[in-house]
Amino acid sequence: MTGHIYIIGMGPGYKEMMTDEAYQAMKNADVIVGYTVYIDLVKEHFPDKEFFTTPMRQEVERCKACYDFAKDGKIVAFICSGDAGVYGMAAPMYELLPEYESQNITADDITVIPGVTAAISGAAQLGAPINHDFCVISLSDLLTPWETIERRLIAAIQGDFAIAIYNPSSKKRHDYLEKACQIMLDAGTDKNRACGYVENIGREGTKTVVCTLEELKNAQVNMFTTVFVGNSKSEIIQGKLVTKRGYEI
Amino acid sequence: MTGHIYIIGMGPGYKEMMTDEAYQAMKNADVIVGYTVYIDLVKEHFPDKEFFTTPMRQEVERCKACYDFAKDGKIVAFICSGDAGVYGMAAPMYELLPEYESQNITADDITVIPGVTAAISGAAQLGAPINHDFCVISLSDLLTPWETIERRLIAAIQGDFAIAIYNPSSKKRHDYLEKACQIMLDAGTDKNRACGYVENIGREGTKTVVCTLEELKNAQVNMFTTVFVGNSKSEIIQGKLVTKRGYEI
Image (tube, rainbow over all chains, first blue to last red; front, side, top):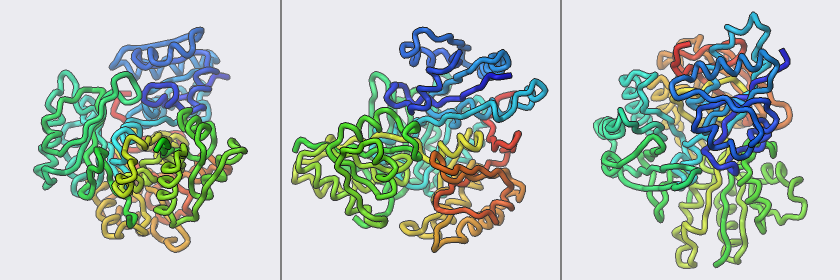
């Protein structure tokens, strides 16, 4: 076994927002593996490369394909949007690793290359919403019970964290952000808490909005939106959402 | 006023871990501003560039210097280690902005360029410790009351978040990680909770350790260490710290 698997965070989309090591790992790979939408974002940069895609919901199959390519001695670039280790494929890859032990694949054959996740890239668009202690919470209950999500939203408010919310909505979960906002309001958050959201970060049609928590509750968001809830001291300054670090200004 | 200020997250250190837009913004700037240690990390790539540094604790002066350069029509690259909006300079810059309104500087004259923060780059070294909902907490009480930090550690445990801890120690705060671990243990965390830490991410001498929470309590860490505490389901798999996403494996 002379292959190697690079699990790569490609950032939000544009090539300029990838790190150089992410780009180089894709360039040097024998095959680039990923979800169809992400492959389409990088294809133009590597016209002669072999690609392997699987549809949504076939994440484990995608992981296994990487191991199979590596067993054949191939250098694999397994791409994730944002960062590979934030709701990405790094964890399932390591969870599958023991299955491949007998085939002489070890943790040394895997490298995770970090990238800019939406909490970071979305924050840059909105101003500085997570410039102090913060939480990242996904509202997707495909793999997480809703009770756990609810418990985390409440804990985040009790700890007075700034919050970045991923997957605020989808076709089947159109009212999840509204529910999440109500949970935060019920937990004692001021309805005027400074909030904001960003759509299509690092892709065509980026849109940023700053608003109050009450306004956020009724916001139209989709699966490409990242939502931010400030902490109790966050402010909107000249249209930017700012969570203070604490310096005397 | 024809200047512009780019507040740039340079990532952990190595040029390969910067995004291309971060690198290009430094390359195209008239002056690169930053803390001495970070300037030293990028100086070699831009031998002919004008640099402006201020010592530690003079962050607000550094921000004001950026505005002064911009008023003179200069393109400014204001560099932060990791990301510019995670304990970085984006927030104090926006907080100072109203002071410069009368001088025709607006939010349009400022661009934040995101970078790979230590929670992300350290996670990649350790495996996948923050691959589900997570919190980022700094133990530095220079700008934050210790009571707030304690409250956030407890909330993070109550919400069963994975946790990335910044600034776990310094010369004056040598026992803060020990105190933080004790707070988490007192909040009901199992002493065998899967944890880990990384030193000198993306620089010479990177060191990674996986351990239990009890072992973490007595770990020797410094200001260049990033610490990770798994959630209740995190596991150490083949030497890697893995917080599961929830796929059926």
